[in-house]
Image (cartoon, rainbow, N blue to C red; front, top):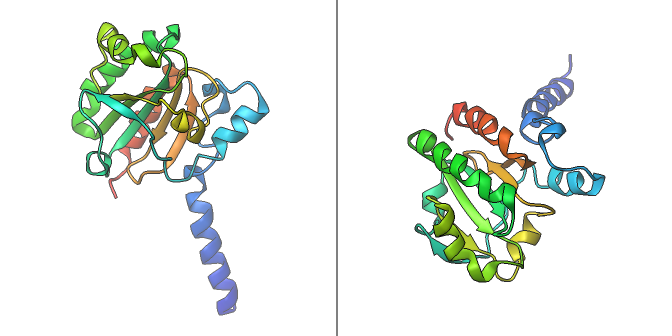
Length: 184
């Protein structure tokens, strides 16, 4: 076999071996995405570095690059008026307590234009125990392709979006898988 063919096979194997981290890794049925455009916008983020946050008014401490480097990150993009979002907070708190020492970080971002003015009071009322901020200019909402609430995104230890649009009941399963992966 020629060197050229061996290089092509080796390169193809390398690419093929990394595909699960980029697309279709978790079932689409685990998402809220019920319209093709929604799933496509989320799939376009998967396998890429996590988008930036454009937020203000942090509670429970802010987040720096150093805080998240090498960690598995759950980003909960929520609205203060959203019932399922508020019902998910206790589970987020429990998940953080359970996995923090294993490298989990949870970040809440209030991204809806409605309810921004009650963000801090809402966070206190519902007992958010993880860093959270608001997105007053809705730049984060756009960057993360938020179509509904809550929109959960899970980022791996390398800073790559591995899943976005998950329904709350599947978040912990994805977290467990990503925490089991070796740190970079």
